[in-house]
Length: 368
Image 1 (tube, rainbow, N blue to C red):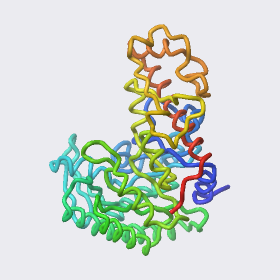
Image 2: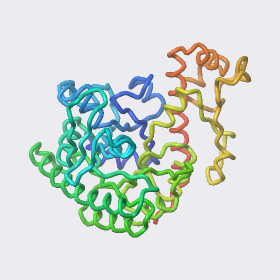
Image 3: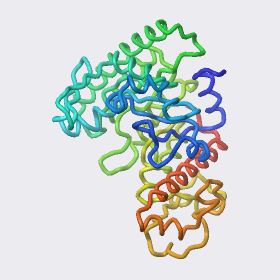
Image 4: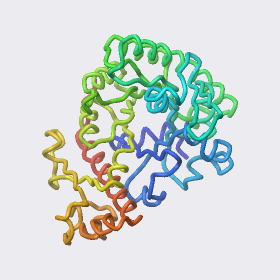
């Protein structure tokens, strides 16, 4: 039986990977069979949210996150660092960030949640992840340099603490090199090239199985922070995989793949699906090197133009949604707010993302 390292390497030889976000141990509106049939090979779950609901002990009692979900593929866990950005940095009443870690105050309770590097690793280990991420201090690219520098300092220190906790957990579980999970570091630094370089060099010296691009990947105008994404990929040795954390729009995925990124995760494609925004290629043979507007189309299924369309969303799509159902039927399901729409639409967007990965894999990404 292949271990996590061998399994991930085999998948990446076939092409890049898109990981749907299964935050609470579920990709909304789908089950494990739906995901498998849509071509999903790896999921991203939230250690921070699962430690609250249903609780790490419950997940462990149910056999770990993959057994609980009935999932046969690989599973990655985030560290909780993004929640520091999305909750605390956006609204300080939800907690605070200190040099020791993160302190969260849930909106529906008065019990504080302390997340240190050590607890983050222990939680991810107990969940049964194949790939784990070090706790990092996530920032927005628009934050001032002094805050970015503080984030880098914390991220480096936390990464070292995570690696030590990881080594101890592996030793206690008597896992050999082939059976242990993978551990990725996360490179922070905002839009400051010097800070990005300093963070990357320190984490590479510490030593990890791969790395993630850290920080919100979009600027204040919603555009991809392409300069920092490209620089961060160039700073990491070509042999080590790079994960573009939080990147999921098809155009952004294609752009990051050209930079050399091989792994992506986001809730965007599945959230877009549930809200009636469905992806398809404009042609059967799209040229992904061209601007995205030339190969990517977003179908707004609620538009009346789809009311009586007998054709599927995409003739060439092999997914369940397009094999079996018409565009007009999807429009009807959306208008009556039936749960079947969310399922079929999610399957469709995930099948699209798999087709995108396959097409990107057919044209190898340039390596730094």
